[in-house]
Image (cartoon, rainbow, N blue to C red; front, side, top):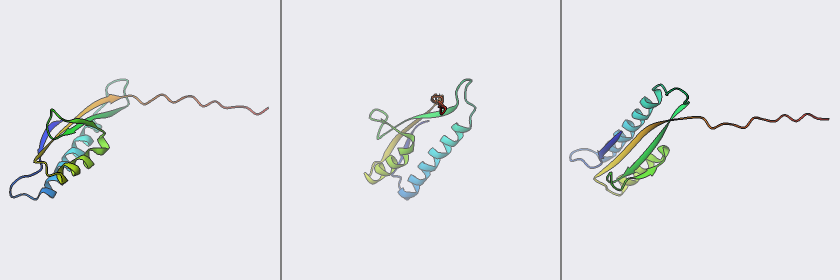
Length: 103
């Protein structure tokens, strides 16, 4: 998803717009997570970027998107750019537990 969301629209409550943006992002992530992962991968990881425009967008963690939208709203941005790309990922290998026998 690469999209520009308007935060200030005439005759619309900006708080409701922010809630709608957050809802659309959550809905998109949920839909992407439900997709089948490619062979050999375990889950979907999301690479996210956020900014006022696509040129100055910076990488952010998926969990921080909601907070970034709130910051943009409080800074009175007229619009914001959100980019979310789903990438298949593997679980990190866990080291085998060594069981020590008592002598």
